[in-house]
Length: 465
Image (cartoon, rainbow, N blue to C red; front, side):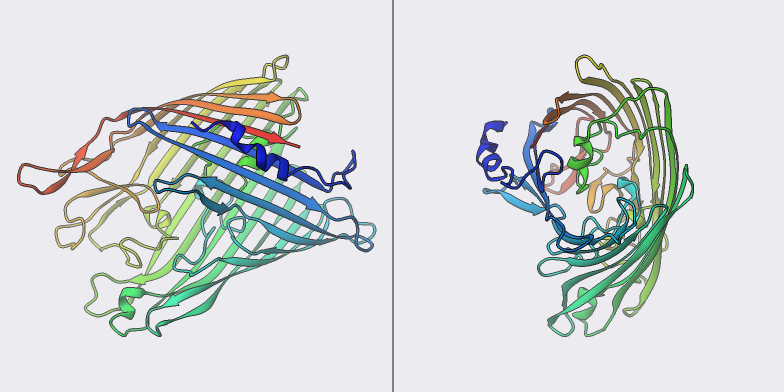
């Protein structure tokens, strides 16, 4: 594993600005260094590095100031070199009229490189449309307008990207519209709603036949949150939330334990429909495919003890919605047997105040989504494909059915004062759906089941100054 000392040059680059004041520094830097041994049995490991810099100007005029967030992610892929990924960097202009409370105001934000912070859904495993255009050439940018008041919030955002058009043999700019907001019905109950409409562009393989066929998308997400007492922060579940652009920011925030009882319960549902190619039509035509997802999460805190529960369901068409489809741009066959993903997680931890240490235990059981096509299908005929995520597929041997995936984790959080912290997890996973393609005695490549048991270690080091 790479030594954390290699982050030192970047630490020096992100030093505090000269105008910083003890009460409200105009710049704040965060660093995250992560070493991951995701599968010890398979001898797999990887190292990641995340850095973020946030800053704001003094008031440019009465109630007006500019803000900026720089967030990027470095990783070492299988090929040589280092991959650089933007994690939602943006620039904002914020205005708070005289007499409005802190946190209220009108904000205009520009997301120049990535739109992953503008999305549908609310809880990470069931969020979608973090990237609206899979066939874009270059970056996907967005313009966001948000109005925030004490008991409600509303936003509208326009995503934009240059998308290839194989029919016209050129690229054209396309747009996705998102809008929504929340309303505090009571001091303890909040309702939230989001909606989206877009066109992903021309279907490439149909365009090669000289036919114009686009992929329209529309969807909505509805959520409700009830909370009581002090906020209950996230548990240490590093693997589940990887990919969320707010992952490192959320986990760095220290948990507070004011005593007494606190709890929150959230419930949400999403529905998305899009036009995909009908695989059974005699000529290229569109078929509407609908997918859905829902999540229920509960958090409880009593003194220094916390408990978390998360259950969610995702249909296979929802999992593949942003890809889109399977195969790409194609709806499922009418005789295909699809099964939704269902997952449940329970965790508990206890904060040892004198040491700043929070050990915990987590258990997760998941029935993965799967697809079994009929004998008439030209793809994966009479075989079962297990989906761990969008296009993350394992093909099972003939006659095998998907099995439950069970994960058990020992977790720990260690807060080293106000400027540093450590998050760690040691996990055991039983996944009977692991396969690799190997040649049989006739030289034909077939899926072969792999050992189901694996042990993983995940460590995240963070610094803030």
